Length: 247
Image (cartoon, rainbow, N blue to C red; front, top):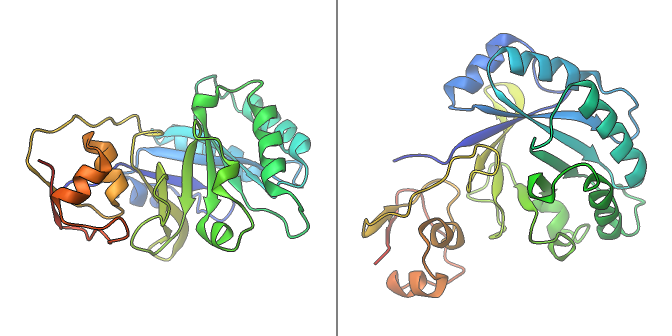
């Protein structure tokens, strides 16, 4: 049973030892998303280390900004300064990892302000918004505040799936062995550029992280039809290894 393509995130907590990168490679990771800047930190040195090491190791390198959403303009300026210094080019995929601060009163409004600043020098098609499922559940961020044309990454480690049907990427683990490390599945190839051919098979074997929505989208099937074919309800869990009727 094939797996969805994987991505890995690199921040100050992630090991810079070459051996760790070898472990990522063994997991099939080819795409590394490096934190270039974080709120209230003027110079995020870990971004330089991981960008250089990842490039030397042959990974495709993308970028991310970690923000508490308190000062969108300053976050955008710090990020773009690092983006230019490290020679990232137009077309690089960029993640905005949202960690709303305790005293941010309107995080959705602040997020859209930040997205507006970033859109001045980045294509909207290359922007990804990452949210913690816990923040969504607690009402700190609303998915309604994220325009549909941005990719959505949901950080929901050690669960059966992302818990959000519209997610294009799911961070499914926060460790590799004993090392801190976010690993995710890239359902629709936003980072990995791995597309999926429509299949003529009558059945599909469910993978880890699948929901009825990901299966319907991947195979070009109307969701209600897929549910009817499988005598399933929208809220039913999809279990890895489950045989799903497609026609």
